Image 1: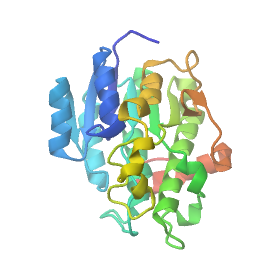
Image 2 (image 1 turned 90 degrees about the vertical axis):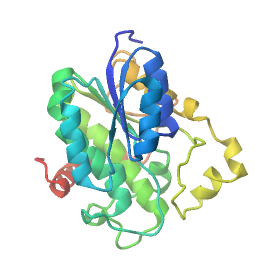
Image 3 (image 1 turned 60 degrees about the vertical axis):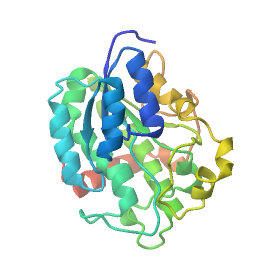
Length: 276
């Protein structure tokens, strides 16, 4: 692993594995930039580390655009960890007109990455997307119905968005690996955090009842994120892949579909208003 200090931006860093990763990376000597939705929780983590922080609600794409403009002033970003996300309840639509799960888990990080792409390329940077085993268990992407208007369930919407995270990393690699950008997606495992607190899914009963004792600590869940952030693509891990416990892992067969990855990229770019 590298010992050279890096600038690491982590979204969803006010709690859970994002906060755990921020603490570990800071302890290892890296410059960590903390991004979260809650001003109070985000400031608390940042103050603890003496780190820079930014607040953005991914349910508002204007917040994402403002965040990207602020982060671009860093001038150099070695790692962008797209970690923010969640599973929610009844189907709802954001102020931008998109299904909430799709926007928060996929469209917002897609837009943030696109807006920071020039900085990431100039930095020889890495993009790490926090995905989930739900991509395999529940995901089945239909580009004609990304918002799941036809058959919405919280688990289906979540699984689709986590599959989109994997496809996003795959297409980032396909488009930009030759220019020095690396990308990967990973599953942190079942982690005892506030995940699913706003959901009506059965997952809520695992994460917020005594059943949570079988779950991993946030520190253990953050391990693969930290490993990807501190490692080097081509030396420690392979760009464009999906990881579990620091190893390339099988997931939804759709994640291997290059044509789907390209089409999802183009559709996502159209939806958020960036060039495809």
